Length: 145
Ligand code: AMP
Image (cartoon, rainbow, N blue to C red):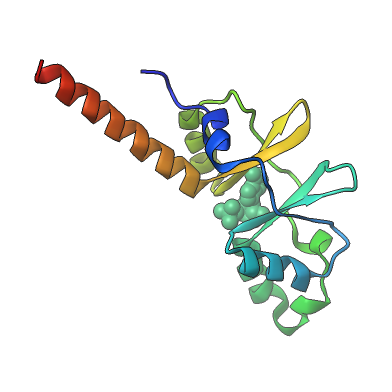
């Protein structure tokens, strides 16, 4: 059985990524998270180049740190700048390892340096469960031959 790759997930969920510019007010980023029911927005420039990532965990940290001044901030003030990315050909097992060791739940996908999608921990878990189920099916078929 072939191991699942990032491209397999993107072929089902598509390449859409919710993005924002770094000079936007933080309220705009929080609105995007809430309205789209997502955990992170990707911060890009006008060429769609990745500049950072802003997730719900950043909201919690910023609330704790800045309290009522949170809404004076811009995305650039609170985003994570060093973004770990992956490639469409990467194995899902490697993505899981990156998320575990980096303690984050989102990894943008770059193809030829261009944004080609985003993988969340939910996508990874779904794909691992599907993989495990199909292995069980294959084994069941094998023993009932
Ligand atoms: P998350 O678990 O995705 O909500 O993110 C936890 C923390 O890691 C937040 O500070 C995010 O800004 C940051 N983060 C999320 N995804 C990445 C990534 N791919 N590379 C680097 N940092 C990230």
